[in-house]
Image (tube, rainbow, N blue to C red; front, side):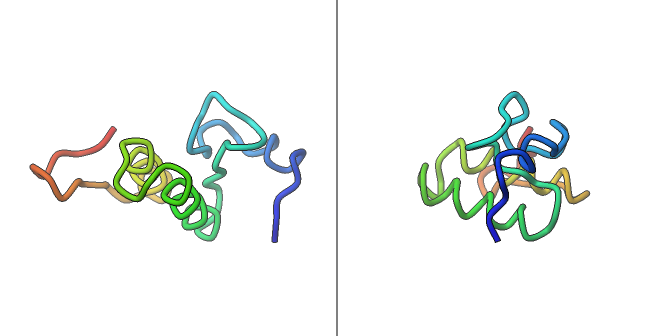
Amino acid sequence: MKMSEAAKKKVPKSKRGVPGKSGTGSYPLDTPKHRGEAVALAAMHHGSHSAFTERIRARAARVAGHVAHTAQKGRTLG
């Protein structure tokens, strides 16, 4: 189900993949389904191993209460 622009704007900044943005491209992370879709869309649009996609993936993990680690050098993404 697609979220309307009005619904996207109601998602708090702390639950968005790109906090300074609302509406289109904001990647809402408020539910598990939205977190999965945000990561998939970021990978599709920016490449699955791009810095942007890794940032969305890490932010989704933080919002879900998990700690995200990269496969490289074991550092935490922030």
